Each structure stands twice: as C-alpha cells, then as structure tokens.
Image (cartoon, rainbow, N blue to C red; front, side):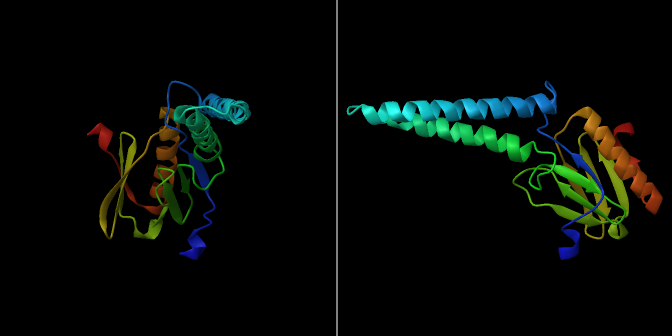
Length: 169
C-alpha cells in the first residue's frame, strides 16, 4: 500500500465543480475574497481595542470575518489547487488508478489487475472488481469529465477490460 501512495500517471483535477465560471477565475475570486475578509479583520481589530464599551456582536464580527477569510483562502489554496494531494482528482496510470472525489474523503487506489468492468455514467464511474460494483460520483466540468473517461477507457481497453457506457443504453 505504501508503494501506491505516490502514483505516477496522468492527473486529472476535478476542480470545484462549477460550470458558470472558469476554474482559474474561480480560484482568483476565492483568493481575492479571502484577502478582503482578512483585511477587514485587520482593520476592525484595532478599532475594537480602542473602544472600551462595545457589545458582544462587535467583538464577534472580527472572528466571523477571520473564519470566512480562512474558508476562502483554504478553498483556493487546497481544494482548487492543481497539485494539492487534498484536491479532488483522478490519477490514471498503467497499473493503478487513484480516485479522490472530495477534499474530505480518503483517496482510493484501484489496481487494474483486479478490475473486471468499467461503467461510465453521468458524472460517475463504476468499477467492478472482486468486491462487486462500486460507483464513484464526482463533480466537475463537462470537458474534464470527457477527458477523464477517455483516459480511463484507453487504459481499460489496453488491459482488455470491458468498458460500458451506461448513458447510451
């Protein structure tokens, strides 16, 4: 299992799953929003320290801004990163496929020798192996989904594994 932690192959990043804006613009927006909330936190804290009488809500505001800043900066630097091991991605190699569909889910490694069948659905991939059929739903853009399915299909056909497109049934 330790040898599988560093899988060399084609990495396909799933991104944030938004289709209304590009991944690059979404990441830039998250960085800007995060830094703006961080700046508002820095501006408000000295003002609160100078005021001797302030209510609880005034003291809670910088903490709220700081939490929002951490959320946006974390999303931009971890979830939308092209290199982060925590970002949702697939790595397709000759021997192993690594699947990580969410930031908070563990990566799963699938050995191609154990795979009997691959099914493609709408934003999900089904892998049938010794344990049975397991579906991996994911969120991404249409172009990324097509690239992912083509990469998996190429390796599966090379290995002689049955590939079924369940969308064409």
